Image 1 (tube, rainbow, N blue to C red):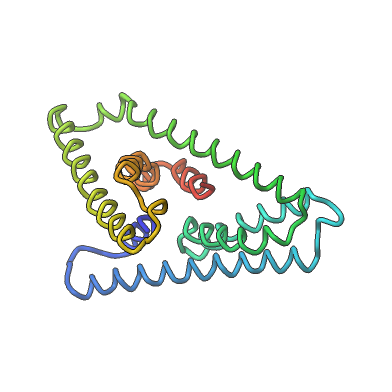
Image 2 (image 1 turned 180 degrees about the horizontal axis):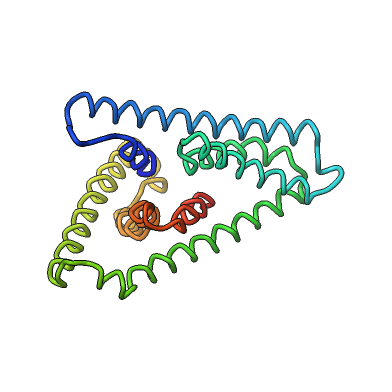
Length: 230
């Protein structure tokens, strides 16, 4: 959602903000969200149809696995060419492929794709957080900033506090609402689990970092694509 909103804001001119600009932002957001979702679902269904019809597993498991990966990447590339949200497209494409395409492949292909994507996700996630950590400790970036150390710490602390409050405002009420409608005690979310959900979400800021420096570094586009594999 943050990526779609970011792309929506980037496409508008905010020299004069009014109600029309707000409606344009809403319209751009809905357009990017709906078109990216439809494109991802369409490519996912197309991959399921192709694999079920041609049944590549009879000839080669490698081709079957390769086709699944290429179709997922194909959805991302088409979305980027159409100036849509590639991450959102590949996200919904992956959901459709996991429900339909994955069940149309052979047993060997299922095992291969399961472990392959799990490995790629782990490597991508590790790379992302290594990049974020190294960028945060880059001395040249700190020297380029005109703000003092006290100002930087104050701004960072303020944003961290806002994130903590925002996460708490979503996690705890929604979890308690869910517990209210759940009858089984074992299915309810305990306060300990709610706390873990609240705190764990603070560590998932790689997409935000990548969007922030998207205009300054081409490497961030690659990071955003790797993040979609998760």
